[in-house]
Length: 133
Image (cartoon, rainbow, N blue to C red; front, side, top):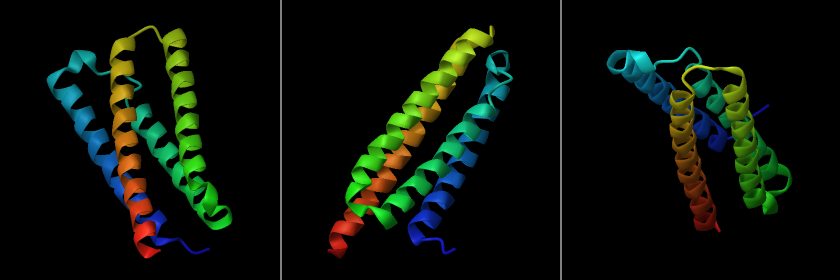
């Protein structure tokens, strides 16, 4: 199975981003605000990393089999991401009694970072496609 250049670029940049942001935020909280570090912190970057893989695989499948629906798939993956994010936040709020505000704020920061990255990446992808035509 061949891996497209788009998928390679996305996964490379996304892996680098999640690794850098995950460690930076984790170390910053643990070093400067240790009373705000929560046990579930590592789950947040892992969730967004796995969802990044899901996003690019959906995008690649759409690009191969239904290229006219790429924008719909992009919006669909953002909707699915929001849905699962809300489910996770609700489960955390109900099941875990500690550090809810810290979890929500950290989750929100990662959500915004991945949203900005996805928007930037796919904007450049679409612009490159238009230049090719």
